[in-house]
Length: 269
Image (cartoon, rainbow, N blue to C red; front, side, top):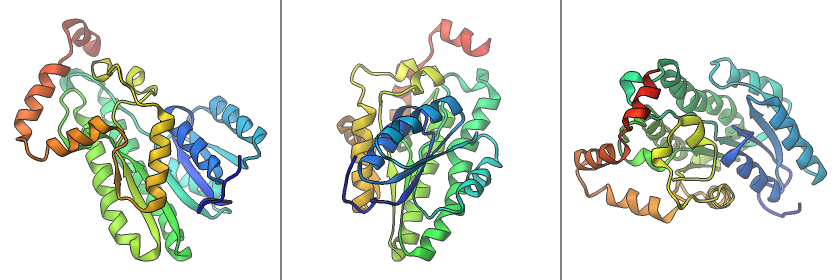
């Protein structure tokens, strides 16, 4: 892997790096010459991925951590504080599909911890050093779900609104220090999300590949684009909802996403 870009020889930290978009983002960064810090819960996957990168000449370090633990961001920071981390990829995320009143309450709270709290904690740890160096790149993975309420993914969509607005606000603050911040808003993408979140009702036949999402996301990050919606249908939806009443959108989303009776029983079991 060779590349001559802004990322050549710089350390990039990727959370949720063991699957899906996280793996694809790590591969794209490596293709552009970055060195990688991969963090996730599953040690075996991280070790396998690190070994694969090693065969390609990519310097890699792994940090096993569960971002559902509020102490994990500091644990990650402490493990790599000897490195100048110039690229922070806040990719790790959780989802859960189903009626809120019968969902797993711990998973609902975990979504807030991982999708929101961990993003803030990690950014607060790594961004000050970027400011000192007057360079840096931060990618926050939000979602097309951040553009409107999504019944039966209620908490997930709300956390992604937080992610998108957090990225936009931070981007304006740190631009004066030469730091780019981008909110990535993927739509339906090839990943484990649908299985883990049991969100098959939202799975479409035309899934965008994680590799394409990663390529477009990193290109947007390099050029300082504040928001990137990599799928055309997502861009269209994000544009359309600006002109339609939120209540109308939510009404039709609820009808299309409503769990069937079997799904409702499973959520309550």
